Image (cartoon, rainbow over all chains, first blue to last red; front, side):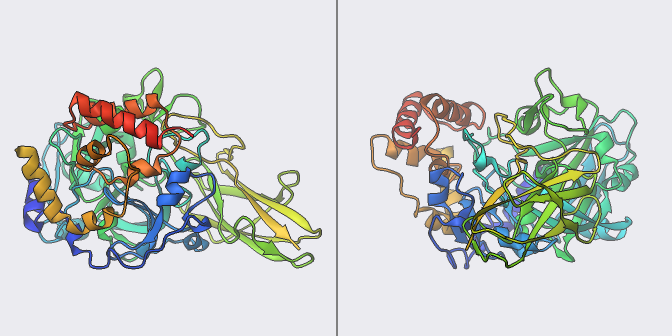
Length: 410
Length: 94
């Protein structure tokens, strides 16, 4: 806790004062750029393209705390540029963390020898690994839930794929002498709420997931330092699991022997039990009715065509997209150009690892004038596929309904 | 007093954000002042516009109650009612 105050002191409070470019490059308008037409009317009317300091213009959902999503055109590439990567915060006090004064405390009753790491320690005292992995907000596509549910009304872009580099969390925990009684590993970051009573954003994961060789304390993203808005100087990376666990500006990691009972784990980020084809369980946090969200459900996105776009009859064209899941890997993507009657396999692009976006392409050949409805459906190596009907849940998570894009053939 | 100090320091630190946020103009109506005075302590007002128009009276009530009971917003009972009234009337269901 004291480290957070030090950061605040050191930086004079909020970071946002650095934002000379804050007001730059924004444009009003509720066109397709702002997201799919299913989004609530108020969401579309209040969305603008706006650049945070160090970012390209992103779709602004809320100013404070800052929530900005990545425009769909950036998903035509497998890796999402750092300056276009989406931004998601729960609380408004976001100190600008200085690399030199940053410290990461490893502690809790389930370690034998608490540690305090500098950024340099993290980079040099542990084996460094790099993993391509999708970071997707649990509530990505929440705005497309019908009936709507409250929350940040995300469209399609509360996600991104990057190469994350850092130390394995398990190596750091083992260095601190992780005890066998450890049940959960608890992460806190430098951000905090307005009032002392506001629950701090603190998250935990089961110890087995913390010890997974792919779970990292990352300080590099796509070959560069993490952008401030994505967790500088270091964040937790939990490949396969939704973004809620990827603690930004991480300042403490505690190994505990009892189930963590903070609001953001005990009450928030929960899904009903038994409704989703989920493999990974967070058993110490399960109740009779719900459980913390864990792995990302299999999903896909058509990235290079938009509703209403015109194509020529007898003129073949390429449809591009991406597919991803919770780390089983994409087995196949099927595309339909007749509204779901016939499906044919798309061609999968380069495999950057089972946690990464997998690009796919498909050549469509419109033969009749009228409407061509394009759909894409991904299936992972565990046999799970996307749904055709929304699986309703109160917080609006795990939207992986097969997309429909209607083109005008003339 | 403590709240006032806290808010003042926040606004000084977040001057740029506040400037951007002023572009959110909520609909005219009784209770708007209470919404602006209370809700902006923690978040910009685009949260309200973005979550409209689909929330019923019951859902807006629950939202205001959550801000007080879960997130610790120091909102009086009277203000809470005025806020929920305003939100339901101006940003409620279609």
